[in-house]
Image 1: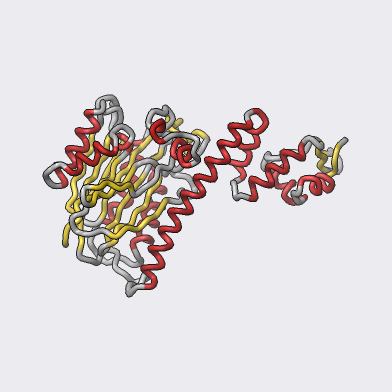
Image 2: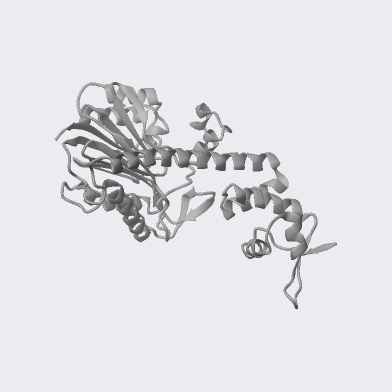
Length: 370
């Protein structure tokens, strides 16, 4: 027996308006549509699926992810459960990042600094920095890019046929932030504008050829890049991060990560579905949830703020380092004697010592009194 849309709405808890929308998007099509009246009819077997959709939407899951979970639920309930846990772990991670950002913003708003008029480059600290790019021992082309200046560090890891151009375009977009000049707005606004500009420039570098990595859970056509940037303003380090390149802070010989990977594997780790020790061995560890691919809307970066002081050492690197060199080995490389140049050389050598399977972009910035 078929149910009218009204009866089905009452049985499932979804409104008729929502049912029409889910039909249009292909998420919950009716069993039959009258060819003359256009009335939608559903079966009782669809009620359970509709209720699942309702609960997934209640936790804020986007339509595309809801569709994937429902498709999994039909054949693999355990897989559907893992997908829900991975989604919620991602939500909690984003919430934690926003909580830290909110605390920094509240501190800044409540202080003596006016967020709307501050020079993005005022203050007494700067970087003494070194850049290293290495093709590695396996790859035939270099698709990573990097920039270092007295106030800005950035790395990008390109992918796809035009990955080299994509990463270079992204870094170039941010390079103008490195000039020590007055700039309207604060560091957060500057970095946000820089990421949007980077995404626009990546669009121009995209040759619309099939890519070899993915963004979200669907294959991306063309090319794209990760992007991680650190802007030093006064005594505050402001970070913008998209993808799986990383930023670290070495203070007192202790290494602390400043970013979180936007990857499917990291989401599984956050959801408790994967042991961190197993993550490095996964063949899909480079599958991205976020990247700059030149789409109409740039993905929302993770933003963060961190107080720094003279004597700190900042490392930005692509996954040619972080995916193959253990954290303790990165720490040893950064703690080795010498300045930023020697530390950058040591990081690259550590990656090569692990087989150099990928391109490397590495930036080491020592925080010094300006």
